[in-house]
Image: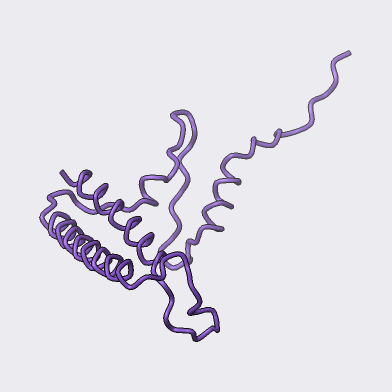
Length: 130
């Protein structure tokens, strides 16, 4: 249901943008207005004005419906960032969480990940076997 309304909403948006761009500019603030255009007759302007009003009403209605459906949704809102967070492989050690007062930004997290992924240094140089 929600997906169908979103698709209708997007089609209304595209049609509304197209109809608005087809209309003749009457402002002339930039010196580009006036002059015959693609649609210069008065009757065509009335049709475009009515089409704009109808599309705008449909856009408004679908926006309200989507807002009401979102308000009635029982799903808990989730963050896109939390969904995209990489999960550690099964054998990898977990990275420690940053302390509360340390600022724990993205750069600190990346540095901790780099430190935990580095191979362990050898304990002592090995003696060559003769």
